[in-house]
Length: 156
Image (cartoon, rainbow, N blue to C red):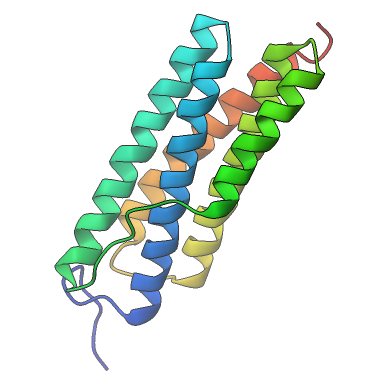
């Protein structure tokens, strides 16, 4: 039995990291897009800060994929592009811009939060657990902040 190390990750762990890289790229891209669509500079700043965290997370995970002689993902998904299009349509149809943008951002944050929860469940004992747990903590904190902020605009 071989013990997994960060320099000798299993195929399952690498596949999970690749998916998390893609989802972090999607989250980054969606948050940057949302930061450009929202008029409230405090919310835009929050989105930019969280997008920066996602970029750092993707780069950190990419480093470990590369250490294992694999090419890390470098692009997000077509689904994320679709989400940005839907945000534009919803934004055009509603007058409550802050709530709409926050609601869409929170949906995207749900995706990344669930991806990290799944990764931690699917590859328990991985050499990457400490890193994934730390990143999940950041993801959950950002998700909860965006969700709570969205709720403050719900009745405006």
